[in-house]
Length: 287
Image (cartoon, rainbow, N blue to C red; front, top):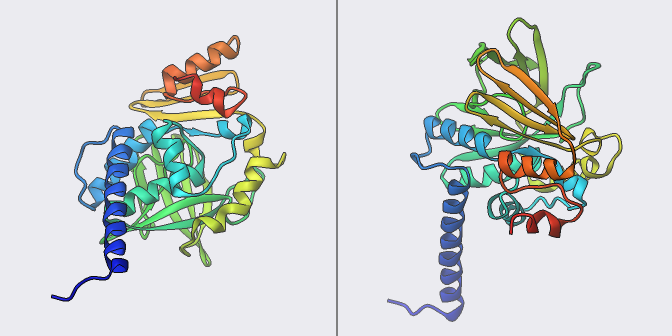
């Protein structure tokens, strides 16, 4: 048996160390989303992981209003979402979820989407990150679009896909696809338009910077923290705490009195996050 050089031994050791680090990070991530089910890369596992993520990791933009830069890099996102117990917006939540899925053996592509505008049309590419997971079927996966589909959608189906009281479908639009949603008693409305070209974090950096800094971005205009619940949703929009519950999505809204109550609601309803003035205060509130 030939002797291995020091260089080869070092490479093997680094690979072993990297695999062990990812194994530990995967365990921590699964604990963060309260997931203890199967890890086999199947459609059922994918469904359960997405639902678990949406029930535990909030859609939030608090970093933007606390002056905390958002870094699109897996280790930075892991530190924020898993170790610090925070949430994030689409680039963060979907970007890190993609890393988890890959570590579990799923084939994942990060896709670019333009979000539908209220006045018609769509935002620019990379306005939103969504995911495609390829198994025996291809699935649209998204844990970073706020109040949207809870379970992955069949990407190549053009049929209506019902989830609870809502329905979704994917329609063709030349070289793009459009995700549509219909609420009870409502009409079909576009959510976002995307194509199937895979991208990496660097491709989203310009739009991520825009959404952190531009007064034209809705993310800079007000604080939001929102997550799904077992029977609805809870949202904190500036000083308004909003709950929707039950099959009819009954809505209750109340206005909070002050910043102290705001921080308390964040701790009690969303876990380890707060919107204090600095990053140090964000973390120290939970020390």
